[in-house]
Length: 211
Length: 211
Image (cartoon, rainbow over all chains, first blue to last red; front, side):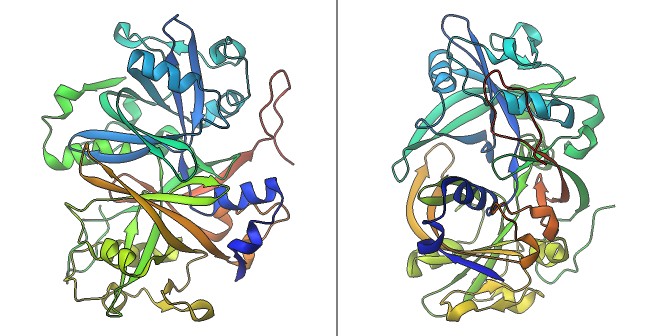
């Protein structure tokens, strides 16, 4: 195997270090977080850190990087308390990635990319049209991560919308049926395919795949 | 689209709720965390919450659920300060999943599954043999998430080992070259394939895919 110690990779150039450290922890979720300012200006941006935190209550978390990302998302979430999380499917990749450019805070990414906003059930905050899984979320708390000046945002899931193609008897959203992508590193978009689902693992019971 | 409000999905049965809430936030990383107790007993378990936190310094985070998971991993990490994170590739799926069974704390999952431990460079903590990306990590801090009694563990990356098949000029680990999997929901293992990598997104510059 190839090996790098912290002393070695700390000396890498910026891009080489970003590529290695961003890709070594595995695949990441691919979502667009949409918000609206108190003035009514919308904002949408790619996040690869949205993570399931628990089901009872239904909570998710994600990481904000105030040092490198314009703070619209954070400011808007704090202003309104609500935001939406929209899964990125294959057809949304290019526009989703473009939304990560450093547009002026006065510009809505919905205006300068082909991403379109959609208001479901007269929601206050827009969803991303065409996204196959869309969550309405409410800000619950934040934990500053002192080690690198990021913020861990905790939010509750208030409503879930999903494409009919994902409907299943056990409520499992098999994400590949809607061509939802996963992120590899800083800039790689991947398309996963389900290999197998397993029964709940038990001691001394032979492992079975689900039918 | 199909819609469920929080009031509705809160009333679902346990499995239906777990399936929906665990799958709606997108794909998750698939890693085996290996630890060793102060007595020398090894432990290995699947974690789907390992997330990149930052590259300078190189940090990752993951979520521990003290209410539902035996606390070996946490106790061992606190006892020794070091642990390993090992990417799950397709050939490791079945044994990785089996390691999540509720074995007695006195049993090492390395003994009762086909997962094999491997000590690289005389490391104190074992790695998982056959895993194509392996990280040596050091506990840095923890943030209790009060909303659901989980713990967000913050760790530094001390060393990175990866399979030669992943070597690339820009240090990008293209995870599909080593058949590394992503997790969908509670029990689904998926195999992603790279669709495209993009240049850093810029304002007013046409988006290009990397060569």
